[in-house]
Image (tube, rainbow, N blue to C red; front, side):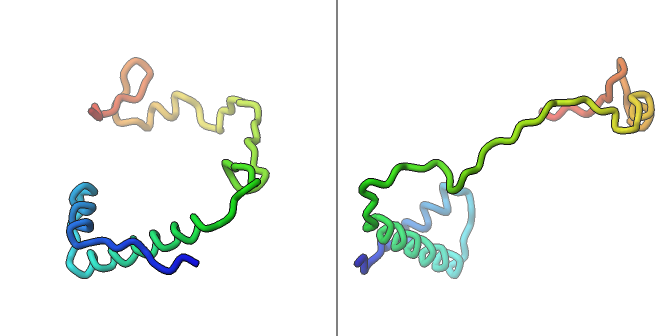
Length: 100
C-alpha cells in the first residue's frame, strides 16, 4: 500500500504562487502545501490500481449529445420595439462601446 506522499518545500509553494499570479499569507501557503501533499498521496494510491484489461473511457456513463432542430422564434417582441429600447442605434443595429 502507498504510505507516503510527495513533500513540497516553501520555495515550491512560493514559485507556484508566483507563476499563478497570487499572493499567499504564511497560513494560506501551509494550507496549499497540505492540499498538494494530499493530492500527491491520492495520485500515488491511484497509480497502484490494477487497470490491466480495463478499456479507456472519456466519460463515465452513457451520455450523448441530444440535438434538436434550430428553429427561429420571434419571442413575442418585434425588432423595432427592441431597437427602440437601445440607447444608441445605427443602421438598424444596436451600437455598443468598443470592447478592445
